Image (cartoon, rainbow, N blue to C red; front, top):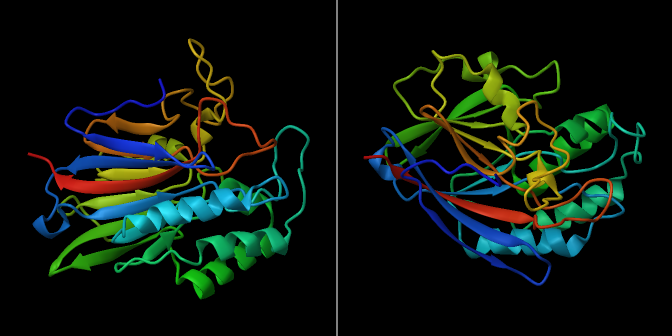
Length: 282
């Protein structure tokens, strides 16, 4: 399936732009959501994969679509560049500052009243310490990004609050959901940013995570009728390919992302910019 959609979760609509980017609007219902966060909007952008094969028009259009909806918060979930990879041929190119600069130019319009938050993806880490430092510093300086590297913070609105957590990429030894969750409990709503949706495998039963926002899979990048996606970088196969997936009370939304890897090809799997609206579950 392209996505498993939970009962009681309403999907809005999407439209496709000249660059093929879909604006996907999704309503997600969360138990015990504070009243002030009912109708709260989060923009989700992931997997830009800035590189020599990337079309800057995709980044421009994705950013434009997001800002057209005036989100109250923006979440960025990694793989900003495609510098290096640890599979297939071993490397598809070293980190190049010029591609990061092109991406930053496109994303410079991103602003939200309650902040822009980000985590790193596997390709960011695989590109080395220089790339990580360049991404972290430039995103902070240019976009005011708040990085969530295995930590959490409170997001307050009119006297009420939810918690936002973030982890390093799941394939990195530095990833620690326990550090990210430190100090939290089951009395509040907790939303986790994780590049890779496989983080679900590390969430213990006693840990309350209401919603995970992820990317990583590209929706498979190539989707074939009756077959699905031939290659999915997930231990769970097609389960977390895209869309909304429910695991008990926990929900995960996986965006198809904006860019592409290895080749500028997407089949039946257009790039996505996402607007999520939170509502309180009955």
